[in-house]
Amino acid sequence: MRKTLAWILAAGCVVGSYATDARVAIMGRDDAFYRDVHNVFKNPASIGFYPNVAYGSYGVYIPRANEVGSTSGITRFNRDPDKPFFGAIVSNRPEEGGKTVSFGAVFNRYDRMKNYILPIYPEVLSAILPDTAHTIDIKPPLGKVDLMGSMTTAGGMTIGLGAYFAHQKITDEKNNVDYQSGIYKGTFGLVAPVAEDMDFEASVNYGLLTAKGLYSVGNTNNIDTLGLTIADRDWFGSIDLRLFSGVPALNATFVPQASFQMVNLHDGETRLIDVNAGLGLNLNIDRGFFFAGIQGLYSDYNWVNSSDLAEQSIGGRVSFGVERNLVWDWFVIRVGGQKILKYATQGKNVGQWIENPESDASDQDLVGLGFGLNIENRLRIDVVAAEDIVYTFTNLFSGPQHHLFKRVSATYSF
Image (cartoon, rainbow, N blue to C red; front, top):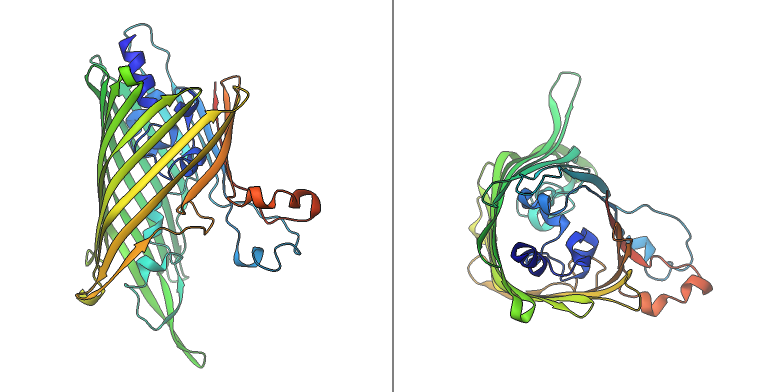
């Protein structure tokens, strides 16, 4: 009974225990302070909390430039969302006192490490490439797959291992490599009870990045195509720690957390460091769940062969999320948000305050809105609504609208 109580306090409410990436996108944009099924990619030891469940996502719908503005209500067309994925976790059903063994596989999930090797992220690549670069051509890695496994020991500790693999290689007729990219990551995680109503979580990620392609320089009359290497089996690593400390008298859980990440690029001459630490509170409310957290943020980016491009930032992040069953037990309404404020310096003297965007329709902006459906406590569907839905809902009847929802994810317990 005590173990069950501790788990309920740590997970939040029952509705949230199978939270998807769509729910996380609403509830504070990050799951640093509460447990959810999407956290298994960071800590594979937690897959034992979600036995025999299928998990999938339609992907993320972000309007393109030609879908917003004056023509958004004129052009009619369909477009599939980006970054869909699916997979499942399977666990044995042990007898009382037996060991729980779980295995999971997820296909096509977009891993955040791709942000460091693809040319669509200029904040990372612009400092590596020459200023005269006109076009960048890096082929994205394919075959994205997550493999995970965990086992619960006799003492109640759960140990997990995970791997992520994505690869691409294109050669010419002489077997010379024109394009090559890849992410190869291994993960070790554990979940351990350290006291009554208290669990400790830790995970370590380590892997290699490869990104080789071409870029073009010059003017329209004289363009040269040159080889480009962003990473050649450059290593990256991260450590994530958090402690769930239940307070039954308050029906709440305090969650201190800390994480560290280092990414090396360009043969280790470019080094990107991100550190954060904070404290969160999970609170079970009537027919719902509430969380709030505060974090300190620090980053140190040292670019290749240029001290003038070195960047540092220090600041903080405040986040919250609340969900509640509305009218019916099967319908959940959610709202959440985050505010990031940092002071960033570049080189020796250049500095400015920066914050996260207010309203760019991304998962990094200020607020989130959405809802969830719980069908017979088996099928759970989470939907992220566009923030302007309450202003444009009548367009469903009076004319075309570029989008009403941004993300749809689901889990099914079998």
